[in-house]
Length: 112
Image (cartoon, rainbow, N blue to C red; front, side, top):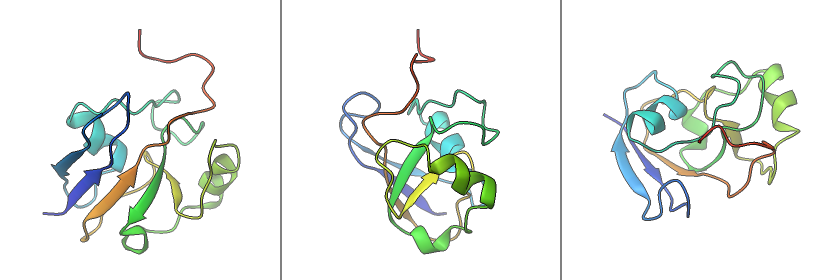
């Protein structure tokens, strides 16, 4: 079973986290199942960039993003070559190291 290592994020997982993932599930679903509250304002339909993450290791084990995801990522804060939308990034066979950016372009947090 692959693991996802979430690097420390001051608000969402200050100490970082190492969690188990099922092959075929999204990085976002793995995070949410493990109480890592990555924002997802569009409810996981690839219509925003609030779930933007950077895959520091294991990037090549994830299928390439489609044109819609690439267009959405152009709007993300802190875009890097290994940026993905976590709702569209499906876990494969390899472990992943994921960095959750400090900021999103979301004007209002979904967390109340």
